[in-house]
Image (cartoon, rainbow, N blue to C red; front, top):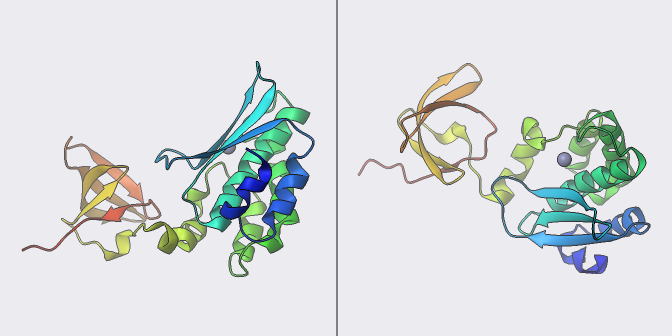
Amino acid sequence: MSLATLEKYLPKDALFYVEKWLQPFPIEIRISRNRESKLGDYRYHPIKRCHQISVNYNLPPDLFFFVLSHEIAHLLVRVSFPRAQAHGPEWKNAYRELLLESVLVYQEDFQPLVEQFSTNPKANFSVSPEIVNYFRPQTNASSFDGLKSGNLFEFRQQRYQLLEKKKKRYLCRNVSTGKEYLFQACAEIKIVANDSR
Ligand SMILES: [Zn+2]
């Protein structure tokens, strides 16, 4: 697909940067179904000799661009430092530069979070509660705030019961396996019907 097809998924004016960053490279971009395990990915296809990036179709535009930039940083590192670690210092530098160069594309209230994140980009933004919370209303996820002990919720298509809050984390039991897990407060859970009737 041509890069211009990305326009409808991106924030206004973001396509300019995507074209600028990707223009020198042979690239295939795929808009993917909603994957629970990841929002995007990058790989180099050695036979086709081209770079492949996919991003989930259903992300809010700012998050789509944020994830796409993450994957483009992988591409740039693959070209310049083929032996670099996936999310090592070269990738952090590349992602930081992309984020800062395009920061004005993001919604005004999201820009400070992008700047803050760019100081030390992490492989997974879910370690940043500010960013998870920013997108929470747009991705229909709910938080532990509205749950009491005994309440049920879903996470990655499995059902869990909240047992108790432990410092900053939540002890929960997988309803079908009986195994217990500690959840971070920012985990993207979905509260299921919890009324007692
Ligand atoms: Zn990555």
